[in-house]
Image (cartoon, rainbow, N blue to C red; front, side, top):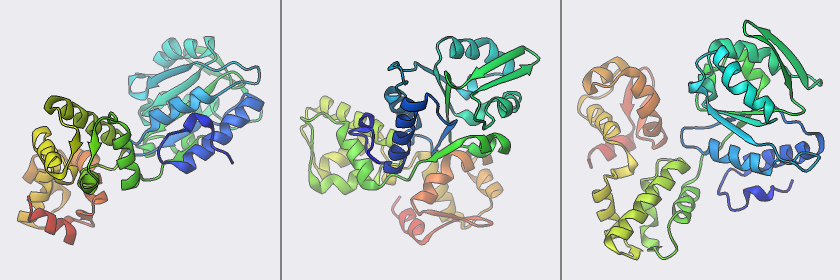
Length: 310
């Protein structure tokens, strides 16, 4: 299957690009899409891919659906959805993209069970306290993106066509970083691994670090990032070893000093809420092979070696 030209120059996610390309070709013939759910980590490129995908969609009559983009967290309840979102969706026969779809309120998730039921008939009618609403999926389309899809009720998840993103390799993240620098700013090849080591595993971080590097280059009028210059950049811009945040470094230091701890213990020692540790900090420590989680949290051998350097 040939990848659609809309994804030309897009780095990584070959499987995602191939699948979306099939849907693009099918839409041009049938004017219908499955109910798509893009799943990946924070900063993994869900919104970027949704926008590229929508740009490539073409109806059988040659027209393209406009994009209606909202965040699931902004939908207070089903009433708000039918008052504010549904009318625009239907009026413009739009491609509705719901980012952070796992935040859709429960009452709307229940309604979506009927509206998004898998059926050959594209037209569905739903009656709620707010009235009766028709969904014609020969005109409308829906795409969600989630980082915590387990928060969606299971019956709704069964109605969605999950497209899961692969992990980005260090090489792909470096390409994303380099592609976001102006051409007049060069990177000494010897600096490449130093850069890769502080990337946090997602394209958004690579883009942000490239933007910071570009700003630094403009401020200092430099043209080449040597190892020495990159080290100076990291100090100036607060880029920690392995790209960890100060909070993540504090967790590593606590485990080095006190040994393995329960989540409750780690929360007490660091002062961070348990939910914040689980949601915001542990994932990258595990991905960087610094932390392992069994009953307790403890540093890996690599984590212990790293802890001695900070």
